[in-house]
Length: 181
Image (cartoon, rainbow, N blue to C red; front, top):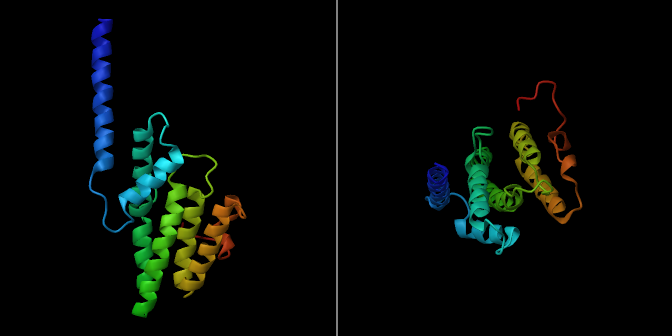
């Protein structure tokens, strides 16, 4: 009986592992940076000799996709948020500039945010603060200055000059009594 349980459990674990691996290999979205880019960065961060590298890498890549495409918790992903911001600009050249700058910001932010690391330099709270403040930036027509502020803060976060606890919505715009986020 013990042997039978062991065999069934082993098959179940193997099946689940296969599903997880296949999930990470499914079609990569065209509108986000390449899977290879994130895979290489993930392996470098996790360590090529790390036990369970493939499982950790699959989880990392899943979080990258959630960052860009959204999730149940935060349905507006970076891709849609960037496009809405670009479309709020009147001039086509400004729309292009916003798309390019948001693309680069997304690459930098997601590389750090997606890791399972309690001491990561960019947190979910930071991403949520940027999303909330971005709506205000559009409302007050300060899209480009907002992007500049986030670019500076991301550089400072990554270099260690800025603590992630400081990056909140009210860093960019005063909190309103009934903030909608």
